[in-house]
Length: 214
Ligand code: SAH
Image (cartoon, rainbow, N blue to C red; front, side):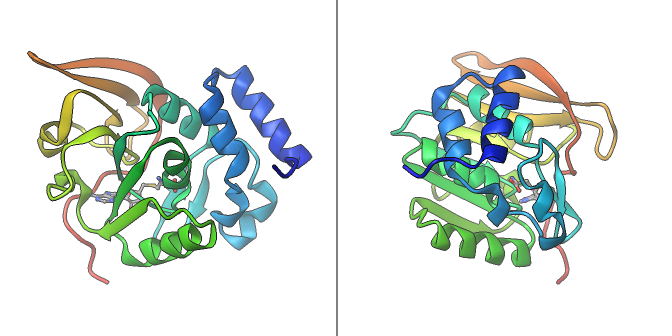
């Protein structure tokens, strides 16, 4: 494998220090060049541990949040995973390195087109995307072993719980839309319903129902 750049190594060390311990997740972050996913004016910050603006007034998540969310999801290499909120495609690319098949839904078509071009460029052929309202999940492909939502909602979308396999895990930011009071939670589907564990205060863009006028 190609040797990682110094700024990538620095970022990986920072993530490790801040709690990303899963070696499969760290190796996925090492292998996916974040520079390909950020907008041109922010290229010099591609390997800094910070969220950055992308098109359609959205953001590419902070690398630490990508690391901790991916780790909390406990993705196995044979799993079928759903992501809601493709955005730049960066989180999808990381998940694609961890699982067998990744499905991702995005409501902004221009973002989706750019993300799909990046997946082709990186030869990530196990990703399937579509434009749509991801709060309804992807019923034709359900059930999923794992679900990750990368936009915040005040409540857990019921369709996503329905599309999760028994013992499946879902990670999502819950809380005030646009507010500062959001928390990442890890949900496990049990025989009796769901088990919810909050694990990190965060700030995400809102999960918006329906499609934008474009
Ligand atoms: N995972 C992305 C983060 C993008 S920000 C990345 O790695 O870059 C969250 C994304 O969720 C935005 O692109 C936003 O348009 C999208 N989104 C918000 N509500 C949505 C919905 N209901 N269905 C699908 N995508 C949604």
